[in-house]
Structure formats: structure tokens, C-alpha cells
Image 1 (cartoon, rainbow, N blue to C red):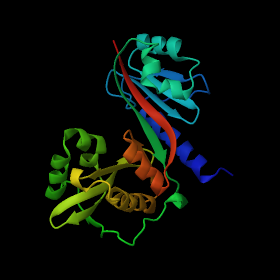
Image 2: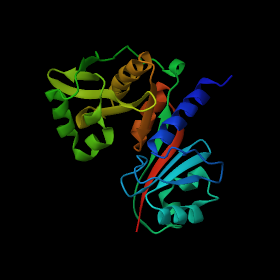
Image 3: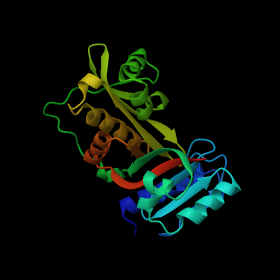
Image 4: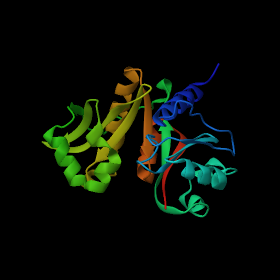
Length: 244
């Protein structure tokens, strides 16, 4: 019988196949990524090439036949590490810009680790769009706020507050295939205190109770550490590439 991490990976593959917007999409085999022409793909911004690697297999979408042919010719034979490395890809294709790579982590129902409660701050909740959350997004700045995805959550938002000020917040956005995409943000002056782990734990527990698969996508090292502390397992990476 498959273990919980393998079940999570299978669900993750089904998610990204659906996001590819190509009915026949499937992951390739080790060393041979599957490449599909899918101009409506959500694996990358419009008109970009999207690479998603899970385990040692990868799925790639391209906006045109020409781009797909170039990708197949240039990238076949690469490991998933190479496929999601911007420098490697830029050495083989005419790359104008890249986004990522971002690490993809997933958490099985029994893997959520508890948060130490000795000095834990109380965690409350707010509805998405609450003025206090908008203030946190503004304080964090456009780059960090955008990276967090907090503006897109569809769940309750779990928060640690100091008076009316939100110090840290986390929720999840409902994605296809019963996936909960985690979104976490901490105020710049409140970082390094474990607050992200507290609110992310609450948001993850909420997703698991609803029967959803928690997904954590992160580029910053600090975000990856929070995910790992909670029990998320890094299962793959995502890279977006804009060709010239």
C-alpha cells in the first residue's frame, strides 16, 4: 500500500496536470521530461514556458509549437535538478527572463508537527480582506506581500496580533484537486520569533480538517525552514522561463 508521502505526491501530480490545461498532460520519465503545447497553462505566466518537477520526473508546458520543439530539443536528457536550474536552462535556450525556482512541499495528514506552546502567542482569526490584513500587506511591501500570496486566501486567516496590529498571518487558497495552497506573511519587525510557524500550523490544520492537501511553495530559505519544521516534505520544484 502506498505510504502517505507517495499518496501526497500522486495528488500533487494530478494537480499540476490539471493546471497545465492540457487534457493529455502527464509527467515524463527520469531524464525525459514531457513537453506539451498549452497556451492556457497555469504552470507559468502567459506566453512563458512552465517547468514542474516532482521527484525525478517533470512536466513542461510551452505556449507555441515552436517553443515546445525548442524545449524538447534542448532539455531532453536533463535531470530534474537541471530542468529547474535557471543557469542550466539559460545555457541551453534563448532565455529572456526566469521566475524561480520555487520549492514545492506537501504534507500528509499524520505528518503535521506540533508547535511548542511554552511561549506561544495566542492565535486568532480574521476574514480575508480585513483592514488589519491590508495594513500588514502594506507594511511588508509589494515584493514580500506578493511572494506570500496572502491577498488571495479563501480560508479564514489565522493571525497573531499585538493590539490592533497583525504581526503574522496565514491562510490557504483553494486550488484544484482539493489542494490548499498555503500563504504566510510576517511583519518585517516581528520576524525571527516563530510567529510564522504558529499561524502556518493553524492554517495547515484547518486545511487538513477540511480534507485538503496542504501545499507550500517557497523560494526564500526562511520560508522553507518554516515548512520543514511543520512536517512538509519537499517533493519538487517549479521554474518559469520566458524565451526570446
